[in-house]
Length: 221
Image (cartoon, rainbow, N blue to C red; front, side):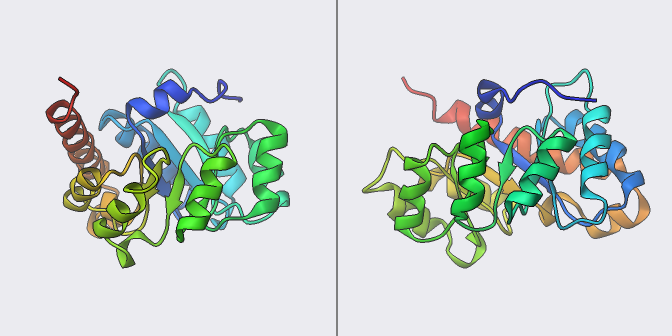
């Protein structure tokens, strides 16, 4: 089952990318449904997860009829890129600034979010046509780093990833961040262990609501 082509407008309406790494296959559908009910619409399944391509296919099927877009993360080689796209992923995320993978994305016209850390990598991501530069690992850099990056380069879009809680997300937004990668804070350990999808839905809703509230409070005019 293929999903529609990537919709950039949909992405920027709620640019919070949920990162699924290492979950069992039977949890994919309920997680997709939980985060969709919680208001989030971007999901990345990492390619270093066992059976990643099958999980991508399951996620696309589970997301049918919703606005959710399913991509692939931890894409470190062009081989992984092709596997992800063949499975139906319609956007790509990398952990580093990988020129080979970026070239594959450009040639195939697949939207991508490359990992970046230095100002040089961030600007190169912008020049390459990336949706945003994934600032990783964000939890070692903090909101001050985002503010420092955006001051001389306000045109670049950045997506802090790594340890992003609701509170940190708001700090990053105040510093100029544009998008986010959400992992562990979205998946309370006990909820995952117990298969408590309502708790994951609630966590997704907390991120959604905080983002909407911030946007409304910072709208022009």
